[in-house]
Amino acid sequence: MLFENLNLIKPIQRALKAEGYTKPTPIQQKSILPILEGKDFLGCAQTGTGKTAAFAIPVLQNLFNDKITSEKGKRYIRALILAPTRELAIQIEENFTAYGKYMDLKNTVIFGGVSQSSQVRALKSGVDILIATPGRLLDLVQQKYIDLHHIKYLVLDEADRMLDMGMVHDVKRIIAEVPKVRQTMLFSATMPREITKLVDSILIDPVRVEVTPVSSTIDTIQQGVYFVQKKNKKSLLIDLLKDKSIVSALVFSRTKHGANMITRYLDKAGINAQAIHGNKSQSARQLALNNFKEGKTRVLVATDIAARGIDVEGLSYVINYDLPNIPETYVHRIGRTGRAGLKGIAVSFCDEEEKEYLSDIQKLIRKVIPVIEDHKYPVEITEPVVNRIKPKNDSNKKSNSNSYSNRRKSAVKSNGFKK
Image (cartoon, rainbow, N blue to C red):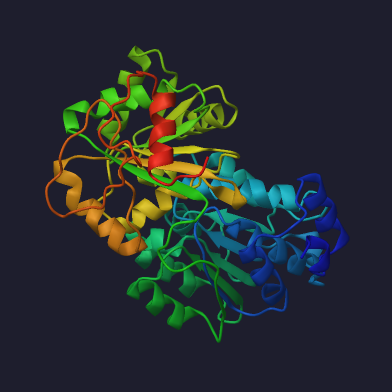
């Protein structure tokens, strides 16, 4: 199926063509028509499957087709999209701008951590579509800068992440402010019990679409794990990044301090890296993200919250320097690569203290992550036992090459990875 088969209006088709879009992803194919028909919608889909376009395209078309006239041409906020982080909110706003470039609709984004003055000016000039993080939205509602009584389309994106970040009460307060008669869309990568309760309370007879199994990883992502002592992780990371074929890599740290430490270590090794986390100013975070997207920075070191919303075209490598203690987070992390049907590689470092995290991750994704044993810093990890896949017919042969590229090729072959 092509986008032109989805009954889209010409301004949107023109914008999609300009963006190089021809064929919808599965979540887009299954979402656009029901949302165009005005039905409530529940989408369970991995990050990187094209969720933003799945709701942005039909919301734009519905707004365009709504025959709404207002006093003296004043614009009211008619579509509200909630996102858990500022980076994701910015990314969504960029997409709305791209898809709606040939339509007379205005959108803006608001989030905390920066001065509200420019955001307030944009709101005062009139907005049809508002993308917001819950905290800043409630703050501006209380200050009477935002009126939610005209909302006709409500979207909750990455709802599971909002719950993880403790935003559920803010979300419920916002829902209480919007009209009861509306179209509601909720997207989530996972469906924990709390999300199910939220769905039952705010969606009416929704169309339910699940494009990949709940909490599974995308098949196009080749996964591997290195068992290594904590003290050797930095050296192993340097070894991996000696491979010049890794044009860009997103490295995950569990803590802000860890992200700074890794960045300093990479800089000393002559590897261009920047960190992005909650203690950085919004301008610094956006600069680091833009540098990474434009290829000016080879390595971006991020914490989980700061990394939500990072959408880098063609990102081939994700490295879990620290394994997450929440298994669902692993799915979100590696979903930064292998996006839109492209292939990607996600490797993880696991020390003795993280073995339980690895076990939990494998239980969640229902897969055994292949162990890459051919590296300089191997270490035995005790129970829980994890399947190891050794090189075929070469289990006793050691590599004489110090080149990570050669070692990776060996590991890829031995672990069943496809080049």
